[in-house]
Amino acid sequence: CFAEAATPAYKSYAKQVIKNAQCLANELTKKGYRIVSGGTDNHCFLVDLTPKKITGLEAQEKLESIGITVNKNLLPFDEQSSTVTSGIRLGTAAVTSRGYKEKDMKQIATWIDQALTTEEKLLIGILKREIETYIKTY
Image (cartoon, rainbow, N blue to C red):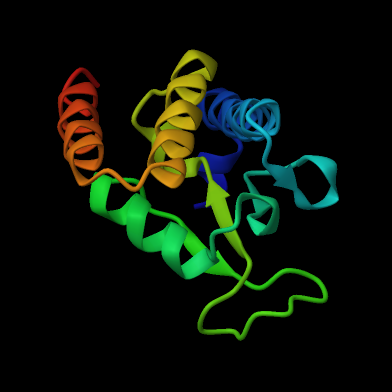
């Protein structure tokens, strides 16, 4: 375990995980999402969904339905219960392990935004198929 972490390949992977997290956070910010603490210096970050009028539980379920895994997460001073929450936590270790880079984070941010801002079941189905096709390329 520690021997692997000392390798140049692992160090490169770890740097890419952080680049991907920063890129994904920046792309979501451009789309009007608020990142708790303003960004990230590591592999994960919290998104405050209050301005988007969606709960963390709703977001988790919608994103799960299209193949994107996130966790509902309480935010500092959250007014929602721990079973509902006002935020979600996103991480980039798994997608980086698949070989995803910053351009892929931009695409993921677009899918997240589309899923969270639509009520159309048809679009959700289209997004799911698009993601299934996309991941086959990695």
